[in-house]
View 1: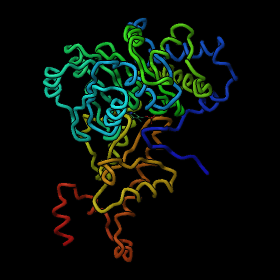
View 2 (view 1 turned 45 degrees about the vertical axis):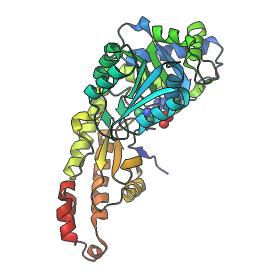
View 3 (view 1 turned 60 degrees about the vertical axis):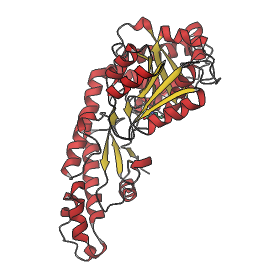
View 4 (view 1 turned 90 degrees about the vertical axis):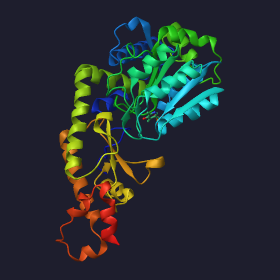
Length: 395
Ligand SMILES: *Cc1c(COP(=O)(O)O)cnc(C)c1O
């Protein structure tokens, strides 16, 4: 079997040198070799986040996927205080559900999936309620929407709250200025824009906020952020046995980004998104949200009328291309095309060509099959606001 081309928001196709990195020397996590490995990863994460006052920030690495890092934050930073979760999608909802388990005073402010937040409504809420922590997803992966860090960070600061960010699908692709956006903690994972294997996640945070965590009682052993910080601070280690091969691979993935240059990497990812989006627009596909609100790592595409999204996914899969179907309220309505990990311009051209063929094939109604030369494009040209036209033609 040949390789799959993962046009997904993660996991991704990893660089060849990561495949060598996972089989590096066996080391013990209580020996100097691991301390050096972890310290190296921490420094590289601070470089990736382009943090200027580096001595004020620390990064802990957790063996567990992105959800583990999010749960570590929500279980460890709120204490007896209150937390406001801002949600406009699947991952915001997941933050809320996680917070409910750990924090008695969990507030939720939600807008429909794929909608933008209104900062004035949030500000008014903060004026009426005593909130200690605000948590928000940066890139809401279910819709592709990039949420406004600077605005919410400023609101948090003005109302004396700390700001906690789920950066699982944006770290490594989008600039996140933790310093100017007043972000106390930001989570991410190894397997999305950073381009390593799944299985590790991390939390980057202000050292002064890490130090405060000891005062809170966390309802978890494994994900207690205070314990991760204590082990990092006192021994440059992790509290429990880390997934060592994945640490080697993460270290290599970060080295790859830094040697390419962080800004260059961001630009390259954005350029791929541009190539994909131009190509898909040419196929008369429409996107779920405004391109100006999109993150650079993926595009959420509306399923054309009369086509079943499962069919698109299966047909592409036959050509070794993997995409994502929409979930929750987007199920059946959208599919998602990622552009992170190892992916060349040639791969993208192959994807676009294959997608075109798949859509044309799926446009063919059973009776049309008798006339293979029928022009197949017109149905595709109907935009969603022309549904009525389509309906009247059909009836
Ligand atoms: C993927 C994702 C997660 C969950 O990460 P896992 O690695 O699947 O646990 C959380 N938040 C966002 C925004 C994501 O995109």
